[in-house]
Length: 316
Image (tube, helix red, strand yellow):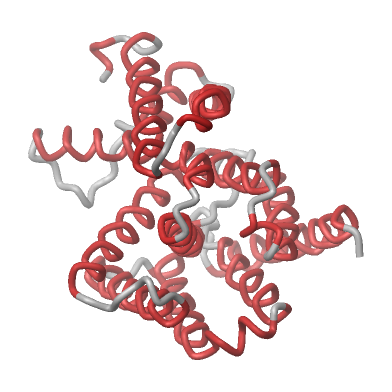
């Protein structure tokens, strides 16, 4: 089956699923905006993993545990679990990720230092992605940018998992038909959790294999990392309740000031700029650390340029 045909078929079925999801949600939760549709990512993971049966046999135990924990996390989108339960689930999945990495790579040891690193990366990834799910097409644009990077550069991770990425594209296309409308449908905590899982696994893969060119896919993520970290520092400085809602993120300010989804522009411009710069300089970059420093520097300059020159300073 061709890639285009597979994407088309899955887009069609995803449209039906998401329409049904919204319909059922509105029956039982009329006063809440439909969220948690990212649960379909779990079934995309499952299908693509079973399709690659040799890999499935190798990690089946970890998969079953992860499947159960993800379904439990889905309850947060429905019933808003206590934050302590969410943290506990993130810790469990972090342990699971490190166990998985140590089982498939001799370069990874299951020790306290590595566990702390995985917990930190995973915790930040889940929450920072979730922070971006509050505006139409925002998290979708970030996620789709990452997928396009995999495809255009034909990374081994893409070629070895092409079924997964084709299904993912189909889902993103269908999700955009609903997510572009205000307060209509969101990926939710479950979507952020599953996207963070894929991201953490791939970051680990790139670092372990010293494939510095693969770090280009980090550019959309680094933008939101800087944004969320900046907002977190501001809120701590102001002694605000970190569990309360805020409107300090860059995309929220752009949404208020410019309307018409102009808040999507900074991500795209930053990625395009990084693309051209890295294509010019990656040839001369020796280590993965130099590549990371370059991408972080560009993103840092880009973020604060959009913050200080396109928004009035008294609005920061």
